[in-house]
Length: 286
Image (cartoon, rainbow, N blue to C red; front, side):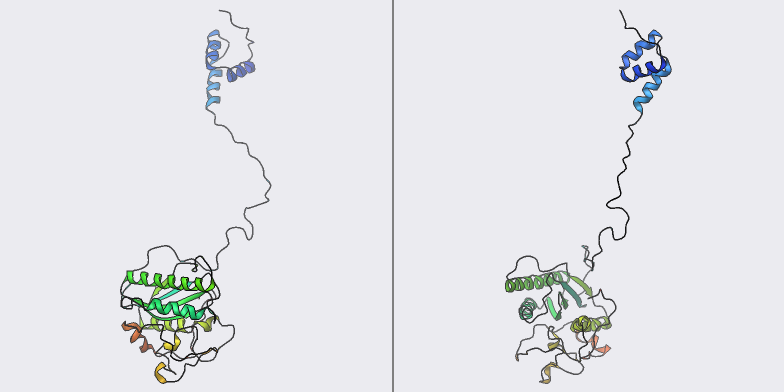
C-alpha cells in the first residue's frame, strides 16, 4: 500500500486533522506522524458550539424612549371573568357603554326609551327596570332580578333590543355596545340612595355649565317617587332642568320596585332633592 507523502509539521497536521476524516487521522496516528494531542484537539473542535456573530444595528426604532410602548386606554375594559353571585334582595347598578356618542339627543332618545320600555315589560316577575338615564355615550340602569340567570338574561334582552332599535333608526349595521355591561350590587340603603342620585342626576356631572334644580328629561326621573320637592302624583308637570317638550299621558317606562332596599330602605337616608347631584370624585368616572 502506497501512501502519499506527508509533511511533518504541527500546524499542517492540525489543518489536515480538521479537514480530513477521522479515519485518515487514525492512519496518521499509526504512522507516527500525528500526535495523540492533535486527535484530542480535533475531538474538542468537533464538540465546540458554533459562535453567533454580533451585528451592530443603529438604534433608530424601538427601545426605551419617552412615549414608547402601548398607549394606555382612557377607560379600562370590563374583565372577562365570572360575575359575582346575585342576590334577589339586592338591586344592581348597571352601565352600558355605546360606540355611538349621540344617544342623548331629541332624535334618538324617544326610540331608545321605547326599547327600554318594551324590554322592561317582557318579564317583570323575574327582571325589573327601576330607573335609567341616557348620557352621551352610555346608559345607567338600576334593576332588580330574581336570580343570576334572570339578571343576565334581562340585561342581555335590554342591550339587544336597544341595539336593534337604534340601528334600525340610523340605518346602520354592526355592534352598538363597546364593552360588556358592568354591574355593581347595592347592598345597603346608603348604597341604593347614592346609586339613585348617581343615575338620575348623572347629567350634572357631565354638564359644561351648572343647572338649577330640576329633573333630567333623558332619564326616568319623571316617574321617580322619591323627590323631596315634587311627586308624579301631584298633578303638576315635572320641573325639568333642561327645556324639553312634554307630552301628557306618556306611559311609565319603568317598573315599581319590589325589594325592601329599593322601595323602603333607601328612604331612611332621606329623599332626593331636585338640585342634588353625584360627587365629582374622578374625571375618568362616568
